[in-house]
Amino acid sequence: MIPLMLVCVMLTGLFSSCQRKPLYLAQRGTLDINVSVYDIQLELLWGVSWKTDWQYLWDESLYGYIGYTEPSGVRANVYTINEDYHRSKYTTRNFSTNGGRVSLTTNNTYDMMFHNNDTEYILYATDDSTYYYATTRSNTRSSYTRSHSTITNHNQPDQLFGTYIRDLYVSDDPDEYTVEEDEDGYLVYVYNVDAELTPYTMIYLFQVMILNNYDEVGQRITGAEGITASGMAGGVDLFNRLNDSTRIVAITQDDIKPIQDNRELTLPDGQKVVGDIFAARMLSWGLPGINPLDHINNKENIQLYDSIYSGIGLQLRNGTIYPVQQNISEQILEHPSGGVITLVIDAAAIPDSIIGGKPQPGGGFDASVDGWDNEINTDIII
Image (cartoon, rainbow, N blue to C red):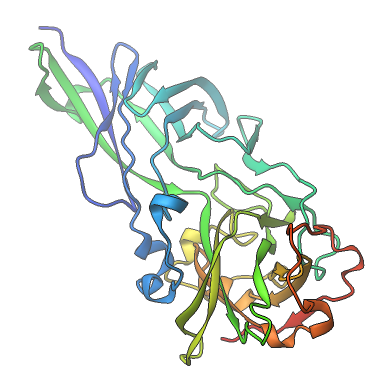
């Protein structure tokens, strides 16, 4: 029987327990890759109280899964490493989540970058040796915030997660391997390496609570055109896992879920009220200049490059869009790896002359809100 040498790299990390499939590396130059992605434990990323804090009734049959979903494919970039730690790309392959194979040579040191390849909006840039950037394009959506007039609006990133394996030396010394026998009766030498498969994009759940939303005519605020988070990172370096600190952007989500009216709500200060609520799910890179996963249990010493604002394009009953914005810096700092962001709007603070007396049929509105003459700046209730 001919012996084979295999390196088994287990993908583990922030995932629920279930069977994991390994990555294999054979002496005769093949790396057999089997990848499975599991449901990430959201409590580890968002905090154990997120289900209590989240008060919008999210119907996954209508709105989709609220957390991360399984990707359809994986990209592998394998780099040879020389004595000066210079990366030279050895091979690049795309695989399904069922796995695939690449060729390698023993007695070499490798770095391996794995990430899902089923992204639509993410742009990648690399020189193979110093950086591997992921970012998104700018767009012309309304941002609903004026506090960052020089910040451009960018597309949300897709969900992106992966693992970067450093300094994997592929030896041909059988003493460094565990001997097993495969299904064909061949001897197989296996070396196990543990790695973490972790998200590069953070999910934020925005819930907007509306108080005093009814008068003698009816509902004053009927929904929203979009929600913006400005002052966020514009991308990430996949090699060092640090978010970009030089490109600060705004991200707008225009997929706003319908208002749920006359709900019993708990405000951030603990007060019980009856009000309306709508919500949106937003993907971002997170705060600039950090690895958000490093701050899940250590929220101190995060440098805030600028205040983080959320802008909301409220839709009024007369069909117009009315922008409001709130400073959400404290909430984002409390949730650097994603989670629930709560905004509270007092509908009674919007002048009756802007609200209008009766709803207009047809529902058309001007999304540009020229001049922002009627903008409201409010302090968020913490």
